[in-house]
Amino acid sequence: MRTNAPDHDPAPRPAAGDGAVTVFAPASIGNLAAGFDVLGVALAPLDGEPWGDFVTAAPAAADELRCRGPFAARLPADPRENLVWRAREAVARRLGAPLPPLALTLHKGLPVASGLGSSAASAVAAVVAIDEALGRPLGDAGRLAAAAEAEASASGAIHLDNVAPILFGGVRLIAGDAGPRELPWPDDLRFVLLLPELALPTRQARAVLPPAVPLPLAVAHAQNLATLVHALHAGERPLLAASLRDLLVEPHRAPLVPGFAAVQAAAREAGALGCSLSGAGPALFAVAAAAHAAAVGERAAAAWRRAGIACRIRLCRVDPHGARRVEG
Image (cartoon, rainbow, N blue to C red; front, side, top):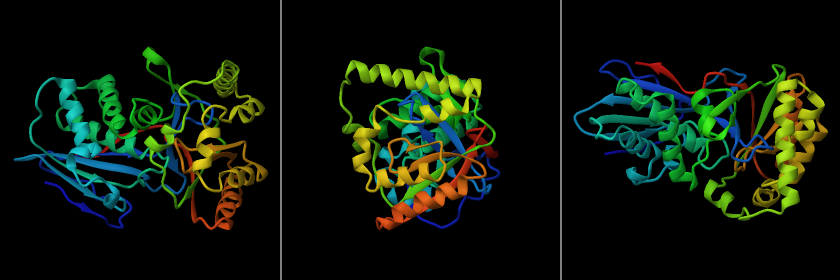
């Protein structure tokens, strides 16, 4: 029914003909330091290369799932545990009817357990591809709900800080029942992604979090999040820098990432406005002015390398589009 076949192509050739639809879903940063489970941003590398997952859905005689790409070998062997398959099931539940047979192909372009919204990217790409192949019966709200349900099977809980920006693009605030709301982002600020050769599953990172926090900490966290949202709307750069910090979960998760403190300090010393875990980690992100972004990345990556940990750098801006159909 399925195969996991790693390859070294940065992206698949989009499928064409026979009703096939291919959808791309970008990498993302969850939490954005101050907004645990309620803030996230979709990413577009400055070099223009697609950085994310692709899913192709096509009519078929029988259901089929294939996995390709540089990180396909890291995916579960059981197809029922694959997020693309779980996305298919979530779409069927949303529609209240069995789906017609589909041939689904995942090109896994994001590393697993990386802090880049990898699970959410697979779920979103699959939901959108399937919905497009079926004639778009879900609508935006249905797509969001189905992708969140599928992604939760990997993370252990429904949270939209990766799913929403990946689906809709931009910087997104999860505003409860009102749904995701887009926040402005300064055009001259870049995201510096620091990608160590480490893995940290989201379930493990969530398991270290306490079930409750002291009231003073809750107040400080709420104040910090509100300040960040205000700073983005008002364009107040000093306030933005002051609020790009994580008071709530970083103290518990940082010990899971070797070298975290040295890398964060190096990024700040090189001129970053802020530096924190990207989602659950182990990747870190820094925010820096465009003119300083490359230097911030090199200084921070060097700190990891001094600790014996290989580290790659990606310089990104906000992806304003999110998941999108690229063929079919």
